[in-house]
Image (cartoon, rainbow, N blue to C red; front, side, top):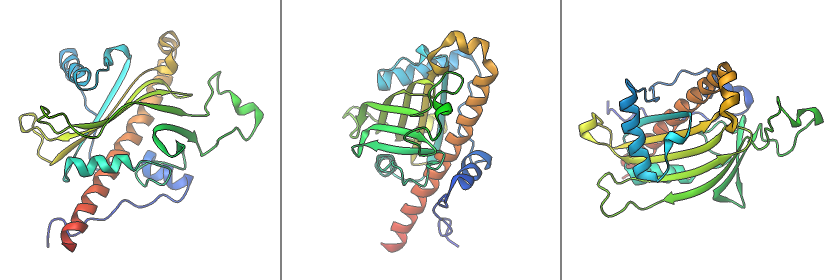
Length: 244
C-alpha cells in the first residue's frame, strides 16, 4: 500500500467537550516543543529569531518555540496559515474563538468560548485580569514572499499580542528544512510565543506555579495545533497527487 494512501484530515471539533479532548487531553503524535540543553544554545536560537523577524526574544521571560516537519511545500503550508479563522479545524475555536476584525488577518480577537461580552457581571475580572478578548492580535508584519537572498524560503506572520492572556509576541513561521540541522521533511512549521506573564514580571515571580500551569496548557494546545496542521497539509497534498 502507498505510504500516503491512508492520510486523513483532522477530525472537526463539534463543541467545547471535543475541543478539550482534541487539544488538551490528547497527547500529540509528534512532540514539538524545542528544549534547549544550555543557555548558550537558547541564546543562539534567540539570535536567529531576532535576525529573521527583528524582534528581540530576550525581552520576554518566557519564550516557547514549537517546531514540526511537514511533507508539503513551504508555500502550501503558509497558505494554510493564511486561512486561519473561526472555522479552522486546527484551532480550538470552541474554547478560543478566532474573530477576524473586519475579516482581516492582520487584526484578530481571540474570544474565550466565543464570548464577545461577559454573560455575568461578576466575570468581568478574573483575579484582576480581563479575559475578553483573551488575545488581541495586531500584525507587525506578514511576510508572504521570501527575500531573494533567503535560501530558507521563509514566510511568516508576526503579531504583537495583548489582551487578557500574557502580553508579548506571536509568530507563525514556515521555512524549508535545513539538512545540517537534521531536518528531513519538505518544510518546517514553527510557532513561537514570547511573553512576561500578564505583562508583569514582579507578579510572575510570586506566582510561578500559575505561570507553569499556563505554560503547560499552552504547550499542549500548541503541539496539537501543529500536529493537526501537519495532518491537514499532508492529507491535502496526498489528495492532489491522487487526483492528478
